[in-house]
Image 1: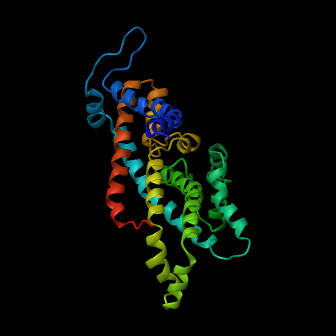
Image 2: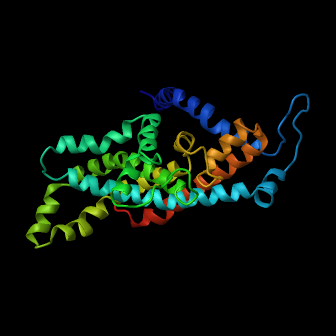
Length: 292
């Protein structure tokens, strides 16, 4: 087959995916960038070009924006390493020969497949003041009742716990697949050299898991800045925006307050943050990764 025909055939195969990607990813991003320079049309008043006014307002006149950005960075700083570390520990456990290994894997992965509404309702019961499971445990030890989702000090941390619980099982699957792809002869050779299990993990297994770690890390960080359903289902951003995250703020600005111009500017900031984080991760970690 001629190379030109092969190229045309390949592009035809990729065309549906390219069309979907352009229609639902690239064009919305470009449209958001364009809309961020225009005011929101209201009734008979058309949109007007405002330049960088939305961005100036964002930095100078919007304390809620600064609050949600801080919340989101704290959220990512806590949930990403916690979920990845827990996923790695779970993968190492279920990769060993233990009893009922299949059931343990299923138990670890079950939170991932639960619908968000179901998961939120489970944790809402745990967090309910007075008769919730966590407060029942606290009362058994003589500790005072706590309104986990209604306090500024605990609301965001309570949402973080749900995220870690729900995402760790998903990341575990990637680590488990990577562990099973490591040739058994490497561990046998390490044993013959007198290396302990911890030394084998640190010197052999973990370096070979770095490509998986990079993939999981990029996805976890992007996911940490795309959280909206947890917040909507559990706290609605309260109390006093203590648990509001950036995407939730964009959602409220666009669909509750109907300020699409300002929401577009917030979306551009979110895209820049995600792009910068992904590029920084790949450039910093790619040199330390061993590809086989």
